[in-house]
Image (cartoon, rainbow over all chains, first blue to last red; front, side):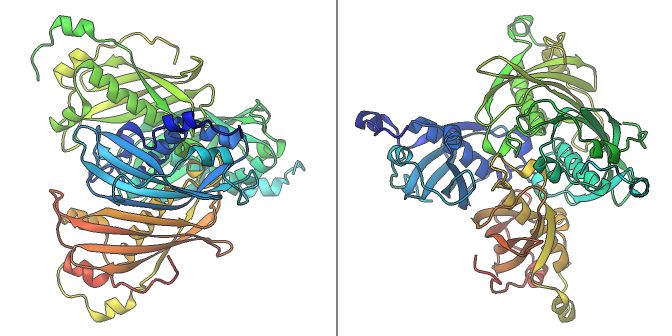
Length: 152
Length: 152
Length: 152
Length: 152
C-alpha cells in the first residue's frame, strides 16, 4: 500500500466528492430544523466517501494502524435543512501536512442548489496506542488539497 | 474478582436503580416529542448506573474481557417526553442465565410521576473476539433478578 | 387527496421497500458495532421511503394534519453491523387499522445478504393537537399489509 | 416578563454555569472516544442550564415566541473523553447584541480537571415564522457576557 501512486490514477481523482443524504426524522428538532450537531455527522459521511473515491478507505487505514481523530471543527449554518430534504454534501482536502489534514465541506439543498452550511474539520493521525503519528505517504499522495470552491 | 460476594453486601443493593435525565434539544423531533430511539439510550444510561450500584462497573467488565451486546429490545411508549422535561429512568434485572441477562426499564416524568414508557433489553456476554461467552460469576451473583415492578 | 386510489396504481406498488445505508462513524460504539439504537433510526428512514413508494409522503401527511407517533418498537439483533458496512433495510406494512399501523423491517448486510436484524414498530395517528386520530383513508388504501417475508 | 431585572438579582447570577454529564455508550465510537459531534450536544445541554440559572428558561422563551438558532459552531478537541467518564461542561455568554448571542464552553474530565475541549456557538433570535428577530430585553439583561475564563 506504500507503492507510489501512478500519476494517471491521481489525475483521474476528482478533488471534490459529493454525497447525498435524506434528512431523517431523528435528525429534526422541535424547531423543525435538522439539529445542528448532525452536520458534523454529514461531514464525516462525506469524508469517508471522499477517501474512498481518492483511492483508499478509512476502514483500511484503521486496520493498517492509522486513526484520524478530529481536533477542530467549525460550521457556519446559513439556511436550515428540514425533514425529508435531500441534501448534497461536498468534501475536499484543504490542507495536508505530515500529521494533520484539514477537510472543507459545503452542504446544499439538492433540489435548489441553495447553500445551507459550510465548514471544516482538522484531523490528526494517531497510532493504535492513540499517540500522535504520521499520515501514511500513500494517503498524503492521494489527498491533494485544493483551494476552497466556496467561502467557508 | 470472582470471590463470593458477601451476603451483607448483596442485601444492601437496591434491586431497582433510578437515574434522572433532562431531555435536551438534540433529542427532540419536529413533533416536539423526545424521538423514540433515545429511549434505548436512556435505558443504556440507566443500566450502566444499575451495574455500578450493584457493585461493579460495565467499564471494568469490558477491561476484564466480557462485553454485553444487546440481542433484543422492546419499548412501549405511553406518553411523550418533551424538551426540558426531567425524566426518571428505573432499571432492574428481570432474568439472568449463564450467557444472557434481561433488564427491565420504566421511564417517568419526574415532576408528575406519570409513566411515559416501559421496556426491556436482553444482552448476551461476548468475549474479546466477540464470541458467545459467559456472564462472570460475580456479576451473576450481584445482579439479582426481581419481578417487574410495573407491567412492561 | 381522499379520492379513491385507482386499482392499477395499487397493483404497481411493491409491498416491500428497500433502502441502502452506509454505517457511518457516529453510529459505531467502542465494541466496533453499530450501536443498537441506530436500528430504530434506520427503520424510520426505511418507513419514510416505504410511504413515498406507496404513493404519498409522510411530510405531506404532517402538512395535512396527521402525525404518526411510535407506540411500540421491537428489535431482534442477530449479527452486528460495522463501520462502512452497506446495509439494506426492507420495510413493509404488517397490519393496519383505523388508528394504528404496524410496520415490519429486516436489515441485511448488502454485500452478503446476511440477516442482521428484524423488528417492528407500531404507530398511531395523532392530529395537530396530538390527540388520537384516524389514519386518512387514502393512506390506508395505499398501505396494503402483507405477511412477514421473514420471521421477526 | 419585560420588567427591568433588579440589580440584586443580577448580582446573584454566576456568569459561568457548570453541568456534569456521564459519557454513555451511545456516545462512544470505535476509536473508544466520545464521538466529536456529541460535544455540540453537551454544549447545548450546558447552555440550557446556563439560561435557567440566569433566571429564565429557553423553553419559556420558545413559548413566548423567540427561538435561538445556531449560526456558527466551533470546537477545539484537546483530549478524548471516554465511556463512563464524568465530564464537566462550563458555559458562559461571550458576546451579546440585539439579534445574536455567542456562548463559550469548556469541557473537563471531572475526576482530574483536565481540559478536554473548548468551543463556542453563535445563535440568532428567530420569531415563530423563523424570520430574524430580536433577543428579548429581559434576556439581554440577564445574559451578561464575560471575558473567556479559558482560551477557546
